Image 1 (spheres, rainbow, N blue to C red):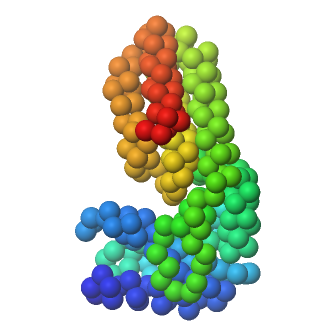
Image 2 (cartoon, rainbow, N blue to C red):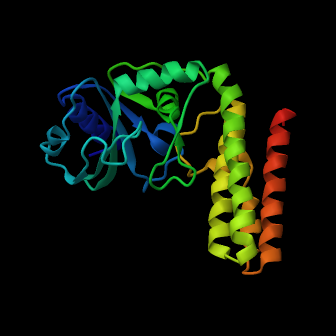
Length: 256
């Protein structure tokens, strides 16, 4: 199948599943940044009792999770599939949850959730970001702008988490010469700061893959590369990371 034929084929099959009201294309293919080897990210939006058994019954090769199988919360499960030789991810999106989080984001309210493979976890407004950036293939969905109240509320939350992450690394890990723990904390704090920077710009984030580049924080690599099992060296690296994060936040505050 050509890419377009493949896109139509998958969208039609997903849209025909019971309870599904809309289907979107996300990820790099929705944003035009993909390569020929990029996978295909679809989301099915359902109302009421979606049953993953209906997706399994289509017969595509791969793994189909139950509702909540990826940890619950707003990112409540999906499937990893092989269709026509292409790698395909399908995400479940409960329309009741999505509409609730959209209303919350418009008031500047959200919460944090852990999610596998995401160092900093995710904000509940991730599902709102998907509405804004993904391509709707079947059905209709809202297309929200970035709410001003969210731009005000999200950056201080993310900056606060980054600050606490570095503080803990300084007191609990650096003094013991624990390189791995410090490296992990610095990486997490970098992602948290990047979320703050992008939120202050009013730019949606749907994953962490290019988050540091977008936030101008790629220089953290050089700091991580200096880590060695010496308390003074680890403390210095944490201080340098904190200075880099503060500079990124200051640049945004000045409109840079």
